[in-house]
Image 1 (cartoon, rainbow, N blue to C red):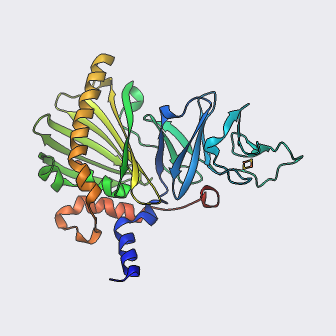
Image 2 (cartoon, rainbow, N blue to C red):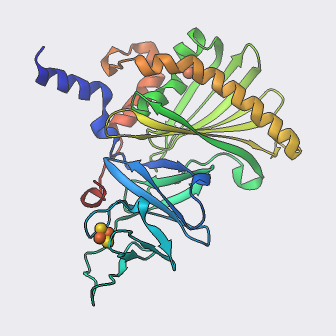
Length: 331
Ligand code: FES
Ligand SMILES: [Fe+2]
């Protein structure tokens, strides 16, 4: 095979060129790594952004490179409500517009950063790849009605595309073969008008018993699951990936326990214990998957009829809208 054919094949089975540009919410940092009055840089799309937390706790996300000579603003210093580039002290306001150039009497109108929609949720900083959000950051049933104990973690760099990892949830063959869980009710899947895909299914795990799952794909890179155990206890899983230009993606996971569900309340201590147990279950499944996921070479056209649930997700990913509104700014 010649090199050109090899490159085309690689694009086909990594899908990376498209997944970098999905118009979806991407997690870029753990919320608690962005201090008050602090700034951090992060991979985003085919470039880089900075997350700035102002003193009032609000966050803004901008293209990372100063509009003067392109210094990386993750090195900038927040000062007097502005973000000041270290190199020549150009200062950017909270809309990303340059408001002050110390040595000049006027500021060029073009001296602005690209501002992305951003939100802090589930212990993560999320950035939407578009001018305005087209659907919400991952939402879970009843989360607005109860206090939720949660913990978010950065799970590392995963070698496959984010959307390929997300097939895993509806890969009912591997659920039985690898995780030793029985599917009791097979998935029902439906696509919402706003581009979110909903599904539910019921599984029996040999250790923890029966649990039913209501899930949603908030874009091809993010899955949100509400699991109800036989006891009636509810748990939340939000798993989302941000692709990197070199291939693969950075994976973030947030697990949560609502303290009130189905009319039953638990104490914070009980919630903490449930959360620890949920991490144990999650990490068991994650560890069983990880080495295989990191070594596989996925080919869409090798799926068979029995893979129909996964195929639905793959079709969803393939058809998902793309864009790159900050392209002139972020790389
Ligand atoms: S590079 Fe930022 S002020 Fe010059
Ligand atoms: Fe799995």
